[in-house]
Image 1: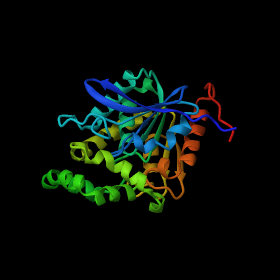
Image 2: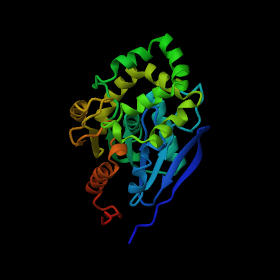
Image 3: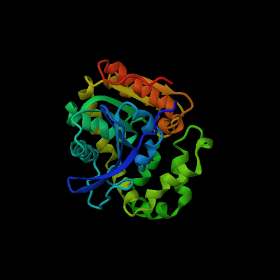
Image 4: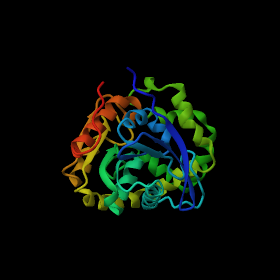
Length: 292
């Protein structure tokens, strides 16, 4: 007997004067999925139906990304992003949740957990941006150059091959990428302001990573899982152990063959790891694994 198809709803919410688009599915304890830089809720399209069997899943397009509001006056510091995510949780009525953050979204969830630990039952960090990864440092330095920062958004917006490049370098095996995936990631990148917002985020990188490092020790009592693809070229998998030094009780799950977005390349394996962790940390939860 087939399981019923879960409905994934597209909704909008006004959070502190900003229009936020998000996906919602399922029922049960809240589980919030936070995408990375230049991503959006589309990134979680394969994971949401699996996770929504046992949780009420929320996947926002963070302001400045995807199809949420993208204003030129948005504060692009990491702390501001964490505060906007906190406003989203309050807006959808989430008192506490399992929080899954990917890449820059992982850094955002770390800051949120430091600001409002009572909101976070469990934390799953998927190759989170961190001060110890050496990958991409030259690109980050280039984007901090004022001339490059000024020219890059206009060039990148119109250069579709660049969009494909951004996506392909996030996969461990680029042959797994479909045209629908490339089109899906490219769709919001042509919106005015999206690339500009990302460049502004990069301009604050050094200070944001310093604040993240100071925040990590505050999370020692929050059950945490670190998930990495062992072929990640965006955030160095070796930095997992350096992050773990600040979170000595955290568990580490390395997914063989996957790149920066394991929930894209191998969603079943990724979701199994997330669910096993959540059930182990919340043995009294009202949800139980579905039979295969």
